[in-house]
Image (cartoon, rainbow, N blue to C red):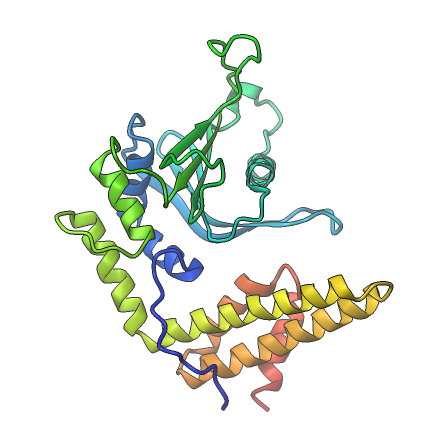
Length: 293
């Protein structure tokens, strides 16, 4: 079976899959939240989910897939995202993610607006979106005339700029920036875990295969997106091409996963997580079955 060629590239903390696999450890996730939000008292994290799809019931509405979605013991909800490319829309992206989180936690009958959960949208960026050189930015809704008045929406938007100035920041926050930049960290048990985990992932053939297949799929989407931009007046044809590319990518992933000895159960679980927003889950199951014939 043909598999994606391994170029030997080292995948660091900012790679989407690596980020998720490191953050799935509740203690480390809790530590990162406390590093970014030191004034919060977080005793326990609950319901930690990776690549959580918050899908709308309206088929014409854009769906959202969150990197890390987690709730703490006080019911506060956190969305932690890794952003590697500056598409110049970070503010609106954060707003849309918050709206999806609120819709996902819709108030039930009998509940009041006071029951709406406190929400934190946190983006870890490899670029300085506000372009002010800070390592940490925190945004809230204030009165235009007098910033002493804060509108208590219960929403918080935080940007970590991995390229920002570290002077004056806590050592843990500086270490987080180091981790994002692939710099060696010493003297920290938590970051020692993260660095060891990243090393283990890079030495694990199955993990590397998953990352490479994921990157291939992203590249295919980008290439077809560029083709769509050039092809005026043939939108339907482009959609067909994108569908074919996605189906081809799924078949390639099935072959790749099986070549590395990954069970069909795990393959199906991974494919449904990655593609269920684009392809009918039943079609994915049928594609798995046709490969076994």
